[in-house]
Image (cartoon, rainbow, N blue to C red):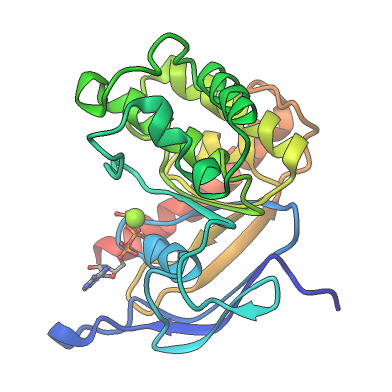
Length: 257
Ligand SMILES: Nc1ncnc2c1ncn2[C@@H]1O[C@H](COP(=O)(O)OP(=O)(O)OP(=O)(O)O)[C@@H](O)[C@H]1O
Ligand SMILES: [Mg+2]
């Protein structure tokens, strides 16, 4: 079988300092090349833990995490990561300089860098703000620059942890549509964490729901059959919404027990 974009096999992760039970245990998930997967589950079930392992910021306690068939050994630009409320912009660089960090390191010619900056600033709706420093940008604007910075690296895998949670509703809808458009063009594999079932159904090929933790793993997965671009009022979306919501409500109750 061809290697997947990413594969978790029997992964457990225990944060042992307080003697807690493993956050995830025997976690299995395969993400195909070019596939868009949304990960849902009650707060604290281990979604960020799983994404962090694939990003390479932490190691599993047992089991294997592969990127394109190779064990993940650490972070790399080919796996672009966007965390919620992450504030990793360099304060001494402008928005444009921040988003061009990757292309500069790769020594992309200057003319091309200008074109990348223009395209990505337009994409995230920040034309005219490129010369501002992070302290001069709002929280949502900084978040969008971080997304643009990751996209500038043209990663083959995008790892996004509630990347739109801090955005206003209009910008969020726009960013969802734009993300689908970028994904259809570049076809990176995507692991996208959200609490918003509608967001998952607009974005994903497959919606994966985790069980309440500890010792969490995948409970079930839904293939989203509706064609793209998706219509938020498509009856297939509404039907899937009901089904996923029912499973989520069960896990939410278990998380509270
Ligand atoms: N660095 C850490 N040290 C100790 N425990 C941790 C650490 N990171 C996560 N945990 C624990 O692991 C469990 C899963 O946390 P995680 O952040 O993965 O949840 P999540 O599903 O992303 O939740 P949310 O939806 O609230 O973001 C929680 O019980 C949490 O307390
Ligand atoms: Mg999380």
